[in-house]
Length: 89
Length: 195
Image (cartoon, rainbow over all chains, first blue to last red; front, side, top):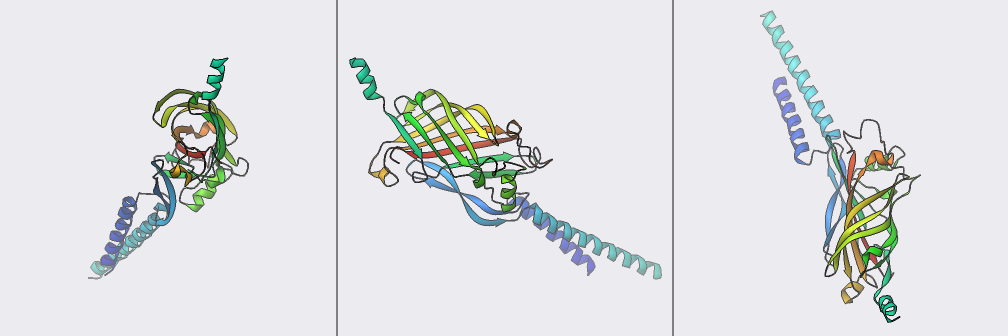
């Protein structure tokens, strides 16, 4: 059971990093993004800021690191339990 | 005498007031560093330019943006950017450009392009820079009056800013890794002769 939870944590950690890369791999979390606005009279484009949350490495990196640490601990506990079983047998 | 009168009649120097009633005055910039790419904007543009559409080499004036309006989409980073470690918005509230000369002007209808040389001031340091510009001049019409009275102008330019040239040191270790040593800046200004 511990093994499967560990693998799930590793998959989630990998997913977090993939999501981070796919959403622009920002170091810091963005709370606003630039949205282009066309000026029809002058045919120019300017940018406005729109509220949008894009998690950066500051959050997702911490989540991925935490999940990986949990996975490592669980796998280590699993390995230790198997070793003890082998020794007692 | 007749020649002088003719020259006076064709010279039409007008004062353009930079205003957000005409368009979205904005400076956009990009910092490209190995660990992060940051895009930001600055607003609060103000200033006046005097220009003669028939002789753009005589254009002069000063425009400025408010340092405190620097925005990058991350509140904590914006506060840092405006702090005394970076641009110090309290001590240096404006970033400005004063036109010294204009050259290489070419025109095509109501658009013109050329090179503008001027004094660029950032973080209390002033340097002379030259940048290409394009200008669109819209004579007053029913369409332009919906925005503002007078003739309407848009001026766009872009240039690069090396942070060390302006004593912007930032937090140790960030310039070169998370903040680009050279920032690419684009400016779009809108103004009217009737404001």
